[in-house]
Length: 299
Image 1 (cartoon, rainbow, N blue to C red):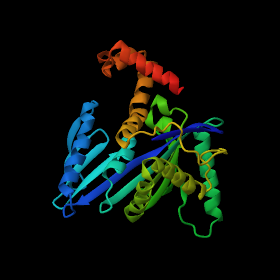
Image 2: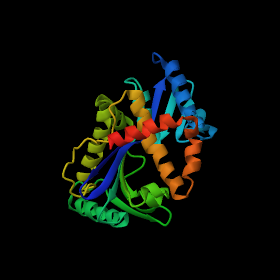
Image 3: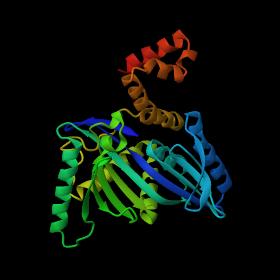
Image 4: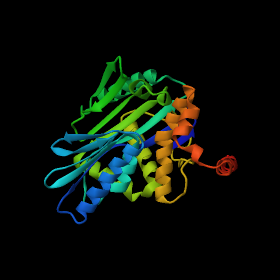
């Protein structure tokens, strides 16, 4: 997941939010792929997630956190949502695999307006654009739920393409997302496979840029401007580190998963306990001081 700052908004997070990959048993290297993907799913147990036996759409397997893997007689399915989805796509995409669903997201923290206002304004703009169109396809719908707040939806969850935007803070009930608006593209079948292939071909760093550009393009085509007049619409997120893929992947995971948890624990006065749980007590004073000195040099 990448993060950037700009005019009109505090910052933006972008990434893959859902991916479903299936690989047929007849493909070369199928068994190795399935075994490795299974181990990756079980990595969540080390972070405190619970492994649950589960069956989804005829695939029998197990789920750990937001990751699921299951098999049938002739293929295996890997399904990942949330912060792990970008990593799942990057690690387990194959040119001969099938992508049955792909969700891309951009989450924006606006400076001037509340998420509720932005969602309602987006509905008004898309409704006006739809009314003026002769095609009369993709009619926007406005949904209000006291638990998840206001949502604008264009398309159907079962169609090959759907765009939705909503108040991410209300929907998630997480302090980290307070005041944020989530823009999501959901794609299925051949469209999702085509877009996934394009993302992978951009490389690991270019993938984030491609996700961002895709979300912005589809929103703007429907009369929605997520960045509210940002000057540099194509700036690469400067927070991404130029490390080896494995190291960069772990840094992205820390940014997406661990950092919000630490902020939440700190807000509850439990930061020492959180740092203890991370095992920082195992490091020497010299090692910790070196880390602090390095951080100061980066700043």
